[in-house]
Image (spheres, rainbow, N blue to C red):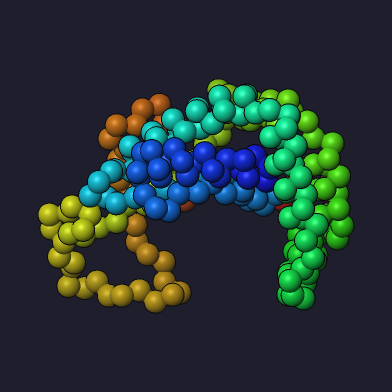
Length: 214
């Protein structure tokens, strides 16, 4: 996953920022949610220029273009990316806190792989270019699981006509949960629009924490 995202960074910025000019904050990220691995593409754009549904469409366009680019990846370029990631993992900790955090995460998650970096390096050395391409294509197929989160601002800078706030609204503290206004999807089709997070998640299966042990 890290190798894929590392290779994705430059074309992601080039397509979504340089060519599509969607915003300055454009980046892909690895995600580990309770042991379930994935990746995300984040774009922060001006509401006065583009709406979030257009941005979502452009992200899908990028992923389709990236798939073609990945198919054309040469063995030399693949080897260069693998070597670069291995060197990053071989770097010594810059301070004691990094080592403590890494080892403490193993304790908290009850995985206890204190040599995880060594194992990841060995896995990278055994990985082949076709395996990387096949993995991406499988997880971009019809059975893929995608969560698209749209956060839309409110106010005159976002093009809203009525920007006056209700009189009883106060600035929330750090411990308060904000009341969100859920918007309908206007142009997006073949999607499940989540407007009640608690109700939606209550119908899902609860799985145990997945431990990545090898």
